[in-house]
Image (cartoon, rainbow, N blue to C red; front, side, top):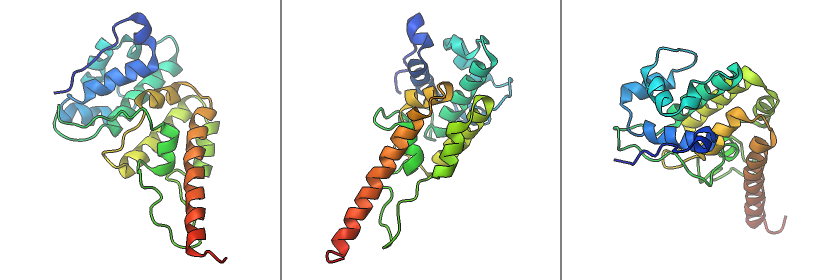
Length: 207
């Protein structure tokens, strides 16, 4: 059974990345019913599993601002949606510090993306550039709504063995800086497009 590490100091308890990592660790040993309830969390206050998390992480129950409180509920729901399914204590680790959320929204959580492309075609991101632009422009509750939609799409396409940077995911719900999502998304897309062009050139060396 994985060790569950909780923030020990006040600084760690207010660091979104540290809190999110601790929550993700707790979710690995939660029961399937608890996880199902957290995946449906939305604005439902009557979810015991959420309050079990809040007992260890007081930031979840703080109401300094309604927007921050709403963001943390969305973070918990997003982590529950992405946590690998399986028996409590046997679920894989969601966290991969090398895979920023923006990159996974591009490649859909697939290391092999975009795979074999037909001649003349280009890599197609999981979240289109238009949808990403809408997400980058959103603020407040609308941003959380759009991020959760993107997380659900990622959960449906993601290879269970491919993780995401849990701390980065949490910060994207709190920090609206568009660069933090856009930069890794477009870095991943650019890398795939250049690889596709190089592959096309190999196929037609005299073109």
